[in-house]
Length: 214
Image (tube, rainbow, N blue to C red):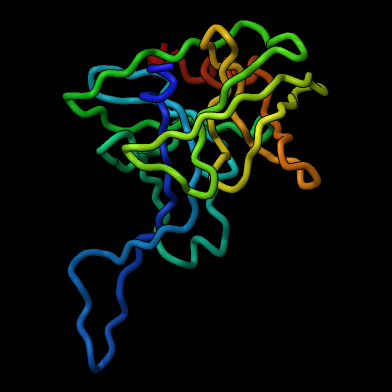
């Protein structure tokens, strides 16, 4: 499970706003940074200078209310380090977002293998996530579940999920990425959903000519 754990990313959406001074106080030189939301992600691959992270697009999107709070940025926490990341491409239909950020000199990542097909119904899958923002350099939450099948492009898993689980990787028994969590069933505690693996490959293919991800 080493590559699954080391490629896990904890993502935080931040608002960077400038202080408005009043008569009694002065503003700091740096913007005021406030966390807005959190999510999970997975490092797909890395180059000599950058890393590429897959997560859920609904986390990457900026709402009108968030825009009112200031400039919105996404910070990726991997192990002991963090960096700001930018969106490369996204798919609203599949709820997928591809981010890129700087790769630090001492970092080494295993390239995440993408499955060529979905598991068989009932096959065991593994999920690495930060539900409710539960993530630190010293802890990783892993969940076992089963693949329950797909209705079109939407696939179902018996994996517990809540806020912060969005974007977390789902692996088959071979350690290959089959999906990421993008939604949780409201009436069940351990039912969640993610896009078909073919949509992940399609997203990567849209930028492969410009950016060498794999």
